[in-house]
Image 1 (spheres, rainbow, N blue to C red):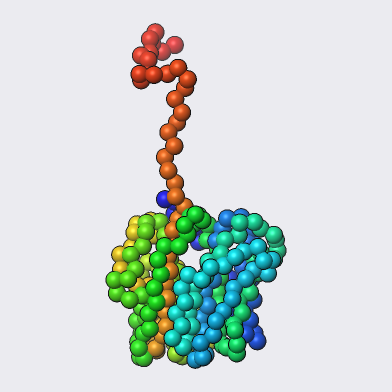
Image 2 (cartoon, rainbow, N blue to C red):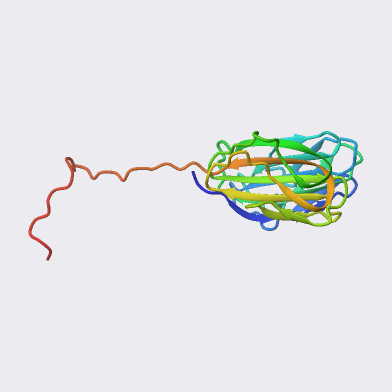
Length: 237
């Protein structure tokens, strides 16, 4: 298996009239994957669509945590690239909503079977430790890219990514958080923990995506060679 590479992040984009338009600068490599997270703070659940402006990237929803506040994780692959519109991602809510969205570009994911595993978790009021998965629910494959996202009941007061995770930052309201990690080894009971300075309720989710499969291809034996190598004679010239 090959190890995925985090190429870039768009940063958080707030919705304008229920639409968030995300620009991921310079997505020009075919077969790279775009992961999109959506985090809704308003209380009425909405459904969402995620598309590329060019229409050449099809997104699949990999996690949908929708108890009131909404957290979603989507993936799409740029099999063909049409600059500059392939790097514009449009997230649309089904109705009046307050949400933010973020996109990341990842290379080296297994396009034949990209999705690994995902889960979701609701954290009670007053928490500074925010779990993205239930205990015992996330055991990943080796060589994975994991992304976790959370939406808080109010501003974080400050956000820190979990151990071995990398921060993708907070939204302008400091109510949406995201982080990622890349792991060569399989992860056991990975809960995608994030911490905040101020205790809040939160809804969180995490998903992992598999790196490319690789296999050993033996060097072809030259025609006529059999039974191992012929002894060298005559010494070195």
